[in-house]
Image 1: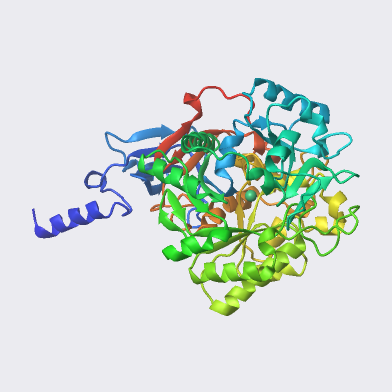
Image 2: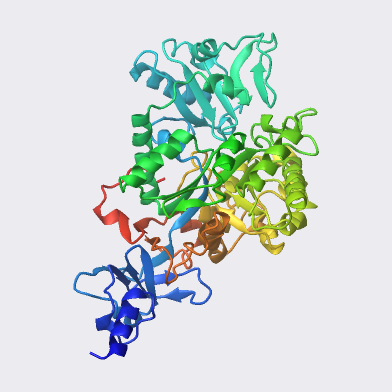
Length: 570
Ligand SMILES: [Zn+2]
């Protein structure tokens, strides 16, 4: 063989990404080829296709069945998609992965439609639980009850004398403790409200059991932490659930070091089937700053280098921080979080984080909460100069009209959860009135101003299923069925925009847009095959579509046809 031919063969071996046309025999065969799919790539250079070839963990070819055929070899695994829709894997930009996994085992109160039902379910769980075991979880939502009053410990005390109970409101900003839990936490009439928190009290000053925001820390401190083995089990449940709903990447907000240790252990054992970007609290900024790692440090399955901060609370708990008071709540205009007391403390931490090239993701919901964080971000940029920092505001729920432009100018990413919009849309106007509600989860306005969106769920606060999020963004049909044509319908997105926010948008939000987020040769082979073409079915049916197959790094991690029938759907 001539020298030049050898050179050519060598080149082919070294460059598996060369577009293969008519050189089928000298090219390595693909490990996986998917044909007959309706591929929506989220890649503007080739928006749709029919087939995809995967070599190792990467996509090597996207095109027609014919284009990709040359990649077939004797050992290539073939998937005939039968004309179904193939999308890039969903990337959930905001989850609480471990509490999500725990929730799969916890008591479920979200669909309790009365206080009696709420009390009955807790009593039932207590009866079955060993003495002393904590009863946790809940996600109760008193707005579904009549009257919609915040529950008190009297409702559950009699049936839970042997078990501490702490059940959370669905927004995670309030919880109800029974008397056993209050006693363990040492909360009495004399306990002061902590900064950024409220112990709800009756007319005589006694705690009712309801605790808001930072006050929940009193209880959380006395709940025994998960053991390592329990945590491994919980993460594995979460991984399996993520695979079953087509989530191939998650961005874990408020990850603990114990969580990261479990991820790293599972990674080493080859058992991580969801890619994870973990963001511990900004109160721990010194640790990551000391390492000098910068943002998005790690490998394709596990990265760190982000920090999660809190500006305020939530709308439903009356703790989101607004310029004007809530309606019908006296002078209450919400609370800045304990991390913001004083604001200079937050500024200092952000400066430190930015100097260490760490990414900052700040929870901010009320208009003044958001505005204050934009001020701080601007301070950081002014102090340190231009850089590709990708500051994020998590939730960005109720925007002041003046701040959309600033959001764009500072290149801040709106990391938003469309499911919250159809959930909060049930009551937002009664809390803050029409004008402020019109800028609530204002996805269209964000896009019009050139702000990048990243979609997620806030799981365990909302279901992890991305199809429900797409449904929410496209229809804005509130969960109470009262807005079938959309709550503030001018803020609806197209299916293509929503899919992009849930794939490329989230990938950009974690500095991974060159690695994932679209079905493009060279990128990681993370894809989902859906039961229905969400681009052509009735938008109201998008949430009912199912994930048939989930592929992460070229490996099939979920196959509905091989799985036992699931109960309940969501
Ligand atoms: Zn969250």
